[in-house]
Image 1 (tube, rainbow, N blue to C red):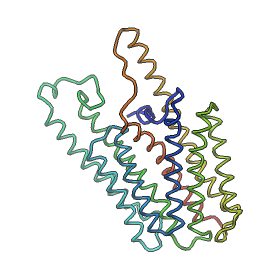
Image 2: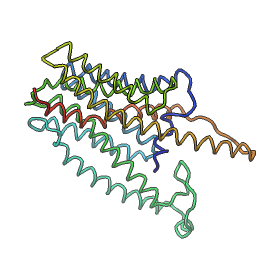
Image 3: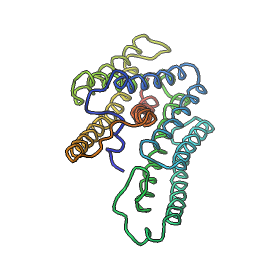
Image 4: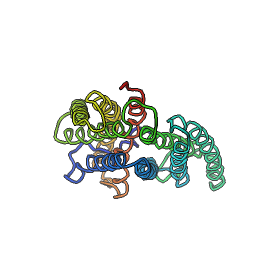
Amino acid sequence: MSAGDLGSGVVTRSRPGAAGALAVPGAVLLAAGLAIGAAALATWALAVVVIVLQVALAWAWGRVLRASPGTVALIAVWALLGDLSLLLTDGHPFHAIVGVGGTGVAAVIVYQLGLRRAVILRAPAADMVRPATSATSGGAGVPSSERVSAELVTALSGIVLGLLLTGYLALRAGRGAEQPADLMTIAGLLGAGIVVAVARLVGWAGLPAALAGPVGVAVAVAAGAGLGALGPGGLSVVAGLTAAAAGAVTAGLVDLVLVRAGEDQAGEDQAGHERLARGGGVVRVGGSAAAAVAGAFVATAVPLACAAPLVYLVGRHLPG
């Protein structure tokens, strides 16, 4: 499984139409906005939004990386177990999900062993003795060891990403921090959401990705400082700025990686299309609507998930 597989469907080198350009910015603002509104309302409301995001991420992650339905189900179930473990633990500490992550690894290994055996048993006897040399998107012709390895990586990475999203819930539900938990969660989500939306829009307008990211971070940090300046619930300018910066820097870096991976994949696809065209081959353009939605959601949820641990760390330990 390569970075290009993850990047494909997330971004393309050529400028898309208006709908394509707004897909990721609109999705990330919607996801972050729902989480912000829920965090302002109550812990249970944020838990509902986090669960929805985790289940959607499990589907999108599996769709983009071509995982089996069983792998998608494992990712979703263990994310939900992480939420439950957190909410049932006194004080709601983020490390309450460590045990869930450990059992998730065990479950994935057991599932992959079963998957490998099933793939081998389904394969014709001739295929078992003749090494496969080519792979297709549907998995036909892929050696069972490679198929299971790809599923293993997809499952483990998906479980980690789902559990990372629980960081926002841990911060919102936690007790004993010097800063207001709900407002620090809101500031972190604000920073993570704005940086991705602004960087994507500015990049689509023509600014290089290496510059679009810092512009997005600057806007996100300013938004966090503005939230603190309003002074709701005792949140200071410094606290709002710091939480937003924690979310923005992490999400911005992850988004840059996704953009670069997508650009590399787009360049490889274009080169392949040109070779096919010169050779008289059939050039297939575009993909299914489900693939486009999955790619956009991965580009939305992965930066938000990766930003959650640092937002939690800052929110829990920033002095008053």
